[in-house]
Image 1 (tube, one colour):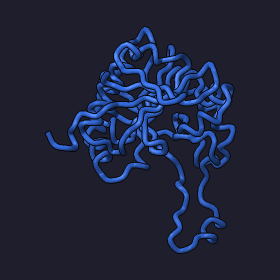
Image 2: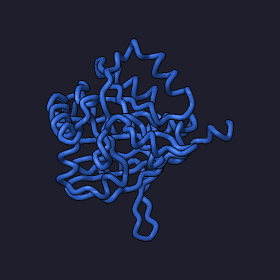
Image 3: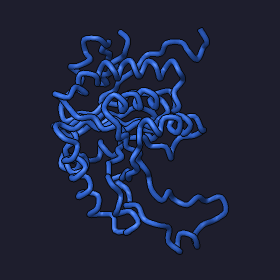
Image 4: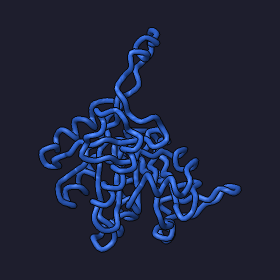
Length: 250
């Protein structure tokens, strides 16, 4: 077995967040993840999230975010499956950052050699095909750093209605007010600095939020209910000082 394919250990850390929310960060060596690590992450997350994806539990919406990804592998994988997944383009919104807006003349005037203009927006591609195809998209793209999955109790319609209402309150530029859907982009510091009410407003009807976070070099999970009881039977519980964490496999 090649060095890059040595089976790794998946480590899950709790993230500080206001009750009743619960949050976790699964560390990743890098994005795109080495093949063995991506496979291990898929095993762990399938085992953890599989029961939640049942229709009697939650409706699952899968999105792909590509702008932040280095290299061409993720873009190629996405393009190869686009006809199968029928992606719909919407807008990802960072709730603790300035709302999206076109570049101003002042920004151009203030540019110095080597400077880059800020991103105009963060597109999300929603997989619109049935649940089996969404799960395939999740498995194909996991490990690149592109996945966002949102689980909603009942219909996803209530989630999209709530997030549209919330985010359009801040978005004034007309260029960004006509997308078919809006979804929150969250990172660890956003969650840790947010109140419970903030998270409720940003997440709307979402019950579980999973995002491959380039900013945190890991997979961020936010949930309205604790999830550690779902994996404590098949992972090892560790503790370093006051820091509790979990490792898979045992």
